[in-house]
Amino acid sequence: MVHFGLIDSLLIVLYFLSVVYVGFRAVRRGRNDTEDFFLAGRTLTLPMFVATLVSTWYGGILGVGEFSYRYGISNWVVFGVPYYVFALLFALLLAKRIRATNHLTIPDKLEASYDRKTALLGGLLTFVLITPAAYVLMVGILIQLVFGLDLVTSVTATTVLTICYLYWGGFRSDVWANALEFVLMFLGFAMILPFAYFKLGGWEYIATHVPPLHLAWNGGNSWQFIAVWFFIALWTLVDPAFHQRCYAAKDGKTAQRGILISIPFWFFFDFMTSMAGLYARAALPDLPNPAFSYPLLAELTLPPIAKGLFYIGMLATIMSTLSSLMFISASTIGRDIVGRWRTDQSVESRAATIHKWTQIGLVLSAIFSIILALEVPSVVKIWYAIGTAIVPGLLVPLMASYFEPLHIPPRYGFWAMLLGWSFSTIWLIYGQLNFVDGSPAYWFGIEPMYPGLIISLLIWGLGRVEREGKGSHKN
Image (cartoon, rainbow, N blue to C red; front, side, top):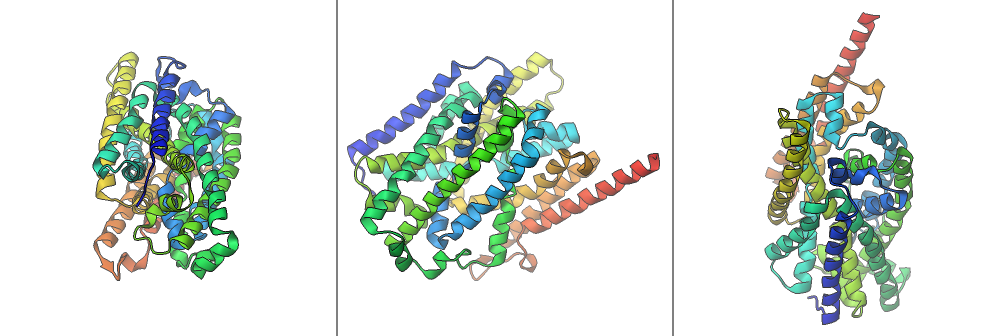
């Protein structure tokens, strides 16, 4: 199915060696303290902020290829437009506020605004939300295609390569590796479009070789299907990678400007990936597995060296996200879960415990991600399930914590988080266990994210009523 020459294989090996080298090289630039390990000493400049945010936030390249192959330009509507909107809101409303708190993680903010119980629950939900299983799966699939290894070996080997430099270098190693991957991901996709154009043709070729609905904004999907992905894009507002990079920026202005500059980069990359998906659908109309649309388009259109560089671009897109999410998962275990249980230690002992358990967390996160990737071998299904279940729990209490007029008492924050998550998760599980005509049969035909958000908002409203009532009583 995919044929790789020696030169292309060597280029990919060189890529992996380069990422590992850059990751270990970054260790020398850091200080041996907690803030440096978790946030690179809060020294991210604007170029490094943009490079690490753009590359981290755009990792699901095979999932994007699968979706654009199935539904055409609606890929841009589903995986592009809502994320630009919420990234813009994040920049305008949250970036400076987040940096001003000087926290290290989202659960730090939850504890400061509510209590430790809410922070621990937030840590658990963050760990699930940020699990890099989808990206472990994607890298494994690509390595399987290139080197002919079985999937278990592929995902295990690439995950080990990812965590090795994070184990010693932490966030600083992640950022420097991301900067290299930022360049390579754009180079790879800028490579395939000209070759596809000269090999196959321009827009007229696409328009005459794809189903008409592939050129419709909704791809033939229902409004509810499109709408739920817009709600899933609320993920942006609670995304730990966004928050982490804002905490790590040298100041609030850098964080805000960095996000605003990142949006055009995402827009341009979405253009390239959507066009590549349309070319794949036009030239390869009968693929049994649309997740392979980009690799097989490369097989059809690219000569040696160019093919290797394109695969490097796909790998860089995925691995930049994989390393970032793996480190956040690990720090969630070390700092936000174990670190919050161990309150009986001195400051120095607690710092050592957090550092050790973050390193252990890298191993635990890797194992969890590998198991989930092998058990749910669909990128889009992993995204959908995690976003649908977790976002309703985190969104309302976290957003309320940043704005004084929206504050609620601690117990309401906890219950809004717990019940928002629980309702959506139970709704999701029920639908996944009861299929009708090949689709999940959710209660009343309602997508599971909505009831979780509604119950969370209702509890927030009760909290606001109590808080305002107490304020009126005092007056």
